[in-house]
Image 1 (tube, one colour):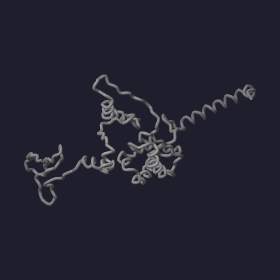
Image 2 (cartoon, one colour; image 1 turned 60 degrees about the vertical axis):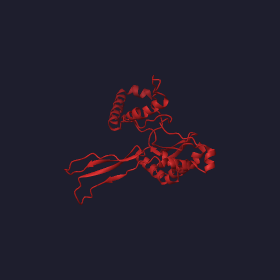
Image 3 (tube, helix red, strand yellow; image 1 turned 45 degrees about the vertical axis):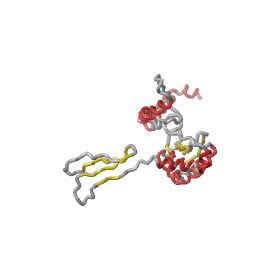
Amino acid sequence: MFSIFIKRPVMAIVLSLSFLFMGFLAIRTLPVSQFPDIAPPRVTISLSFPGSSADVLVKSSLITIERAINGVPGMKYIVSDATSAGEATIQVLFELGVDPNIAMVNVKTRVDQVMSRLPNLVRLEGVVVNFVQPSMLMYVNLYSKDKNADQKFLFNYAYVNVIPEIQRIYGIAQAQILGARQYAMRIWLNPDRMRAYSVSTEEVMDAIAKQSIIGRPGRIGQSTGMAAQSKEYVLIYQAGTTRRSNTPTSSSAPTRKAKSCA
């Protein structure tokens, strides 16, 4: 075959120029992308059930959510895992070319249909649906030479000051801290006393929730639109007492400071 090109140099030159011309046309017409879509779209569902084992989490939540998601348009398969720390992740992989936004909306719709069948604590912790690749791009270790800055302090400092700045960087889909060490109130229950008083953990949690209500007392003197109103008082809660603060309206009447009352 090579002897043909050696004997016919003109034909070899013409073919070479033809290949170069076709390659130039291909460069001008083929799409070029800095980050081409080579991985299939993936929607991740994260949920937590504090205090439960992996088996309890699977039976109470994962099976219900997987059955609801199964058959979503464009889905290839589902991968899920649960840990003994009460945390679980469900990954839904779609066919290449499926719009990630549409896929996330379809999965979110399926999850919302079974939210009422999940345990109350799972709904309280939240079921997060997001389309991100689970691969880690970078790990950042935060430390301090201050002896008073312990692990919990560094965790909450990063949660308040570092994570929001990282999430605003262009191209960052998700930033999170490994582990859960946020400031919280831990309550240790005595099983013997609970058995003696016939009190369950759900009743204790309901009692605590009733003590942590952020209420809206309302307003006094709010204008109805039928007559002019010079001033109204907005009632607020503060340190266990009810206070009222004045909020002037559009009238030209002078304002006065409202005295606090218990």
